[in-house]
Length: 281
Image (cartoon, rainbow, N blue to C red; front, side, top):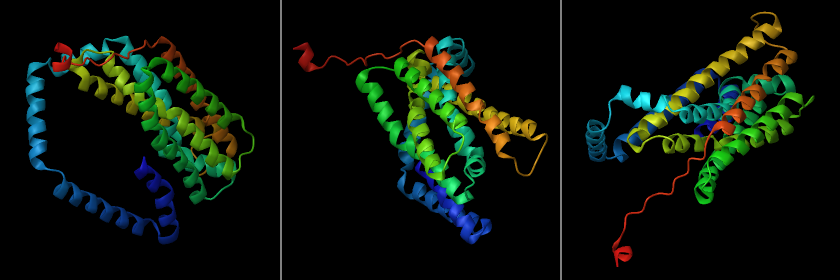
C-alpha cells in the first residue's frame, strides 16, 4: 500500500516535472536497489529450508487438482471470494486504473491532484488493513465484520455516484473513507482458510486471491466498456456523464458482495493450544 501511494501521487509528480522517461529510469534504479537489498539481506539458507519443508508437506497432502477440488467444491470458498472481490473492486477500478481520469473529470482537477486523491484509497487500506485483522482476531468475528464492511462500502460508493459536484478536497476525503470501509477485505483470506481443511490452507488462500484478481481485472474492463458505450464509441477523452454512468458499476458489485456476506457462515475457530506442563500438572 505504501508503494502504491508513492506510485500514484509520487510518480505522477515526477512525470509532470521531469517526464515519463526520467520517471521510468528512477523507478528502475529503485527496483535495482530493492533487488540488492533482497540479495544481501534475505538469507538463502532459510529460503532453502522453507522450500524443503513445503516439499515435504506437499508430498504428505493431496495433489494440486484434488486440493483445488476440495476448495472450489465448498460454497463458502466462493462466498469469501465474492465478498473479497466486492471489497477490492474500488481499489481495482479507481486505484489501479480509472481513478485519476474519473476524479479529473468530475472535479475538474489536474492529474497530480487526482493522483493524490486516488492515493487516499491506499492510505485507507494501509491504516485500516492491520486494524481490521486485529479487530477480527480480538473480537473473534469474521462474517459479521465482512457484512458490515460490505454494507458500508455499498453506501460509500452510492455517495461517490450521486454527489453532483465534488471538490478535490471532498475527493480526498471520500477516497480515504472508501479505503477505510473496504480494507476489511483482508479478512476474506483467513475466512477462506478457516472454511477449508488445514491441509489445503495454502490452496484456499491462492484460490481466493485468484478469484479476487481475476474478477477485479474483469471489473476494470467492464468499467471501460461502459465508458465506451456511454460516450458512443472509443474516445481519447470521455465526458463527465460517461464517467457518471460507468461508476454505477461499483455499488452494483458492492450489492452482490453484501449478498455473498449474508450467505457466508461464521468461520472463526479458536486456535488449539497444545497442553503444556502447567495444564498437565
